[in-house]
Image (cartoon, rainbow, N blue to C red; front, side):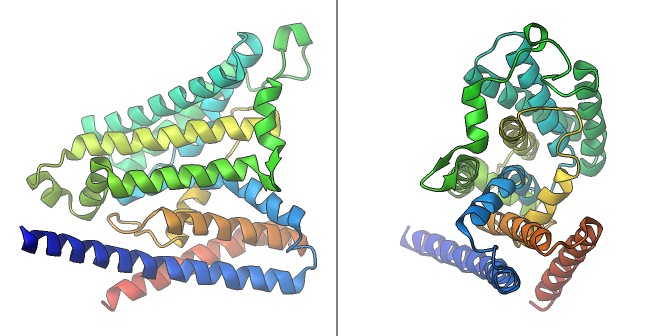
Length: 335
């Protein structure tokens, strides 16, 4: 018994040391990037700009949390942003046309997101469709359904009469602009969800199963882990994060539309990879994802302050992602 406990403690310490090593690299990169922009722009370190970074990063961070769990299980979710858009459109329609309260709209958005995630998981597990292909297909489906139910128009439509379209509840919009002690509510919710996700991965059987399936699915199956159930639950969790993110983005924009958050699925993947999570599963964690999302947010904000052409910003972000993955693969090959 004592030998088993000692082995467990040693394994835990080894995983902790590995996580800290993976985490320190992105943190150092974030510090250097912030120092660079602070030296180039006097507006970067202002309170209002830092709050703006946290507010702008919140949506990507929440999506990246769901993406982290999926990638840790050796999967990928290209539909997560489209799922968020669909959840947002359904919730916005329900609140403006059916009279749902703000909290009911939030629950509805989460429910739609979870259903979208479950659909992904069932397609992948039930029909053995590769994760990439399955979520690429559902990405198109979710966007198409959102376009159908909204007629291609934003919700609420400001072109219509108030009695026909209604407005989004003020309590919902509060999440988009409110602050507590200078910290934007959106950012605080994202950080709370990060802690929530980290606790799930660290202290629950589901979290241990995610790492086991991502590390070696055959060994996980032999040790009694249900690989199919774990895969389905990971995509359901990603759907939950998508529903929350879609609702909060609608609150920030005061509108929802079928094409909102286009490209955010790639930004969420970039945040996970930049944060040190292995793209092939089994290694990584939430702390790195949070830092990765902040790196993307700081990079975009700093380049905007320097008036860098948005086209060049895309190129710089892409080069950064390639560099990080290349360095990570080089580090792993030297072990």
